[in-house]
Length: 396
Image (cartoon, rainbow, N blue to C red; front, side, top):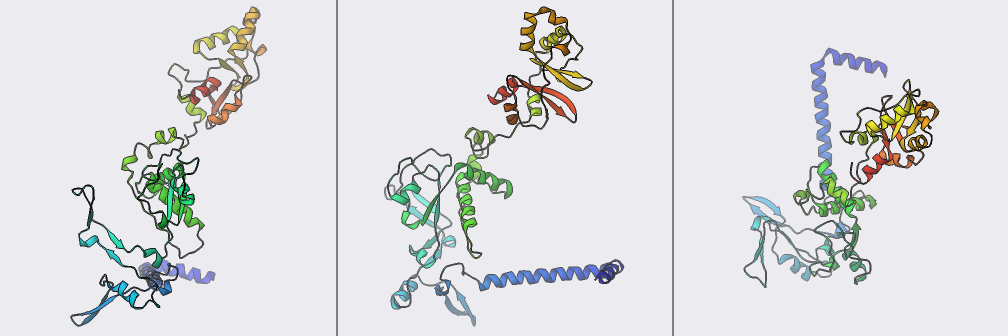
């Protein structure tokens, strides 16, 4: 095997043009075989995804044009019902389908307002027994909080229904007479978050800009597809709206976060330091162990900080808390001239600059009111309980 590979690469290097032509021809041949195989599979399995497809037939019209026999699936509207009536023992049902897109569309007039006309360019007609002939299961998506799902199951307005929801254009807080409940096989509810996150995902990954109701349909379709254990099954859904109307809602991080539909990104302790006011010290303010307590209090007052780390040769050896230190100094004034090392408390904990602030909050207590922040092996600042609290209430 090794010898064959050596000879192969040797020939490739020697006759590069000839080898490139051979490889290109082989690639084109394989691609052609693959495309031909897929085409044959599609033709041989046409409409086989319908249950009982062996008993479904399409009536075609055969005629001769310029001496050639042509066949088209275009017949008279009366032909299907007539054949079904002629052979009732052989034909269970017939359905007529008509694509009216190229026939000028359709227009509807309201009975109460004859002057008001609704016009559709793209339309498709089918008899109301279409799902008896083509067995398609219809599953309707419904927002959590809508009345439709409960009403479809019990035919009564159940308790606890009618809760508010954010997806627009679907669902309802009252039963509409325009919904044909008998045609829908199953109702499923989809949470607002799943619907809107799917809308955002489609815009991001597929370049399809739809609103929350379209996201609801796609989210439900994927849920149903995961439940199916049939490789020949098809799931079809409708993208029924455009996302242009929801740029300030579904596609707005602020709106989504305000409505608890999108988690706020976790802030790090470094970001918390960066959000401090301009008057806050840019670098870490610290004091040496040999410095006097009076000097430490002056530093706290000058920089308006309440916690002060004690640093010796780059190492944190202790910490000072303003309230504790002032209480002791007032009770014993001579303490002001003593070195810091004699009054300092345990060192503040040190966290990396990427540490999330929500994990820092439980670490900060009355006994440990601050934590030091380290980046690339260097201390860059200190975060106190007050800093974390300001972020929680939204002022930072």
